[in-house]
Image (cartoon, rainbow, N blue to C red):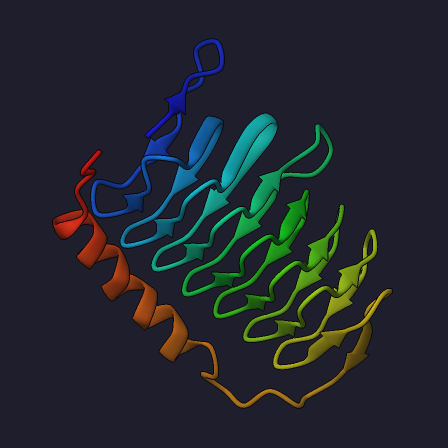
Length: 172
């Protein structure tokens, strides 16, 4: 797996995390216990911190970046769907960002909230806990997500990360 320092700043990856060999992790990045980063995901902490909590999955082709003014902070038990793009935002514990969604500078996805597939959260937009954000630009539906909705998905990716860490082997 390509993991790169940027000057003196090296990524800090918990030894129980699974990072796919074709994912890229650069610079000021923290990845917590039992988290997973899947093929072709790019996590580039060049201008600020990117922090990923425990048991969080960063799925295939996701892009996580930050700016000088905005770190990217991802909580515990979060699912970041395939092809999503996060840029200087916060996703609180048990949040879910759907396939192809974009979450921009200063936006906050509250605890247990869901950002639907292909939705776009504008700069500074806030999705309250247990709410849903759908559309372009995202419209908010408050209080419609049941407590713990994303935990099953988060737990499945913890197990999948273990399977890949222990059983994946390149055969070409």
